[in-house]
Image 1 (cartoon, rainbow, N blue to C red):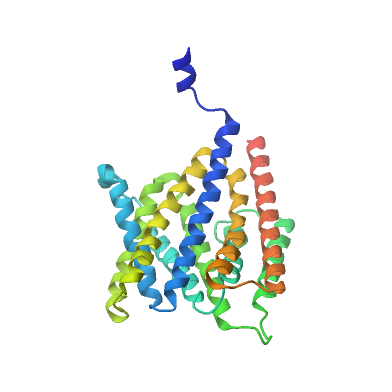
Image 2: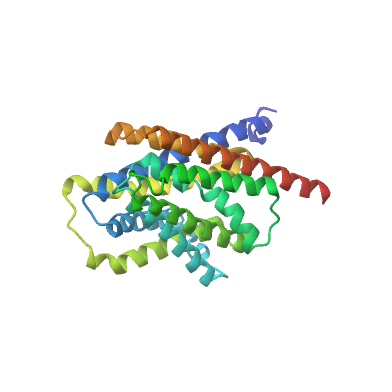
Length: 302
């Protein structure tokens, strides 16, 4: 009887709790990776920092999946994988580049437009239905971004448009991921994302390379290794709990980004940035709530 209980599946609440914990761990890892990138981006070219993330991450994933690497590398959608990877590379490069001029919290808040941009793009590209309430949520998120960016004001900097461009690239990445759907394994998509990113940045590396100071080697290695750990946490989160449950906890990245910015760089977002971040987070949660309700309604109708 004891053995049977040991082998039985854990109760749903416990699995859900683990999924939420994994999502929070992923958020912490991703924001720490961004903080490491900000520490390096002032001394090295963006391409060199992005190269470190993708190259180390590719090696880590290849070692993790070494026994089944041949299977993982098989894809039925090579060109979609290339396009998807290019979008993710653009998102990472623009976000890292922005960190040279603006704070972690500001960049993260603007980048958090991506969930509502994905909703809008899904309606335009994939012809998914979007009602007036979700449109209102999308509009509110853009207002939040404008509050942070403040175009035309004395505090406006063109660098604040970089995380917005990164959010647009990430939207393309998410839409292509939806197009591929369940036809490819998570690990196949993951290794192509890192492999192609590593190849593209390696090609450009000779034009920007700067010798790495010995004291910075752990930062370069840390970006890639933490990226691998963050991806594993994220996969576990969606494995152990429903996406509708764990996704809202991704909004905590604003809290951790502000915390690391304050601890490591002495940056504290101003009142307008905090207000805009709250508007974006609130709009994102509202859009997520409406999408969850719509999804459940479709399932009940089916």
